[in-house]
Amino acid sequence: MTGTAVCPDPPTPECDEPRVGAPARAGRREWLGLAVLALPTILIGLDGTVLHLAAPVLSTDLAPSSSQLLWIIDVYGFVVAGLLVTMGTVGDRIGRRRLLMIGAAGFLVASVLAAFATSPELLIAARALLGLAGATLMPSTLSLLSNMFRDPGQRQLAIAIWMTNFMIGGMAGPLIGGVLLEHFWWGSVFLIGVPPLIVLLVAAPILLPEFRNVRAGRIDLVSVALSTGAIVLVVYAIKETAEDGFHSGGVGIAVVGVFLGWVFGRRQLGLAEPLIDLRLFRRATFSASLGAQMFGLYVLAAMGFLTVQYFQLVLGMSPLQAGLWMLPTMVAGIIGTLGAPWVVRHLRPGTAMTLGFVAAVPGLVLMAMTGRMPMVVGLAIASLGIQVVLALTYDVVVSSAPPEQAGVASGMGETGTELGIALGIAIAGSLVAAVYRAGIPVGAPESARDTLGGAIAAAERLPGPVAQQLLEVARDAYTNGIQLAAVMCAAIVVLLGVATATLVRTD
Image 1 (cartoon, one colour):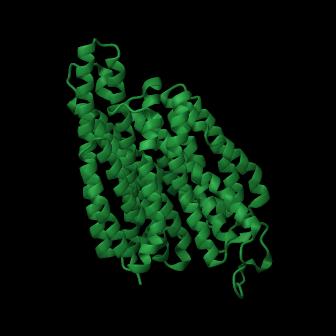
Image 2: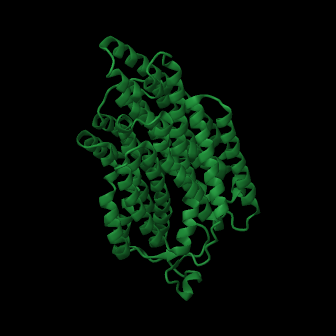
Image 3: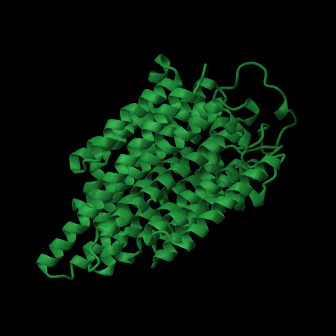
């Protein structure tokens, strides 16, 4: 993702010469190659939604603590966020098709390990390996796509198709995952990606060209370690505080994480080839757009995750039923994504982004009422508004950076995407866990005090009236947590609307 000279592998002598005339139009092979590149993007969309569906089931089987459950869901995103820019540089050096195939093979192996994990610790480790492999997929697919489609019109269409595949994966996830969880064990959801990954590994050498950057910068491993360590330690401190309350250990971990982040920032300013060029943040449009992207996804990820849990744990839906009730949100998101180009033809990007956030606020307020229909309708409204914003932020983030730093800017955009999703689930999940724990009576079984899934399991071993009372208290406590999370997300969206209105300036 870094650097500017992109050449086929092996590079030709003329590859760095200025191109003369109109760019070559993509042919049949490139469009078939786009279909191959769609496979990992659909897979990533699938992976997020099916895991949310599987969380209540695997909670019963593996009995993870609330902190472990959040790590199972989040560790993938944190590893990806810490390594995306690094993997973009690796792809520049060794070849983007080669990195894509290495990542696909690693993702396949890690998926099988996750499917057959026998403890929360093993599943967390497998999810971390999935994150390591997943960090190679996004930079590789987008870089290959940009080089395969040189004609601007074709490239815009190809990128639109590429982006839509995430939503297609997100829509298919609840249906496929729900059916699997109705008939098989929770680990089956991790095996969904095995067939398409096999197809990718077979078809990639045939349909995808190889590209590498002959002037790629070196990989600063110290920066990689500092950025990943800062993210993981701070989030770990948040999770532990939600589970055990404020204590010296959690505060100490947070301080170390913040210190590592400070050292990382200082190091980037002194490097000739930084992992992240922090000077880009001096540009108000860049900073505001990146923040809108990251925290917009924070809100959608947080409320999407909590809604699926609410449907299953509070309303008693099956995984398939919960997945079906999530479809309106996916459809609304696709409408928002596809409608954004029409909106921006009539409004400036900053104005369109502000209106998207404004439109999302009523949906989040509606979700704070809880109940099946308020949650379904509210999340669909929020998704429609925020997806309009997200469809615009990527282009604004890249175009607001200097041309020679477009690759770095796109890598930072991808990092913000993954980090926003992971933080949304982690922080909102920790908030709900803390509210839930505060609402459970001291005399309740210990497992019931940890998670709602634990309360449901404990109720099965108690006499009827006592079990019913425990379930009512537990579900009320969990619902209170979701209501607070929805109000906080609405406040975040209001702030994002103000920021985009005042800071995003585009010609």
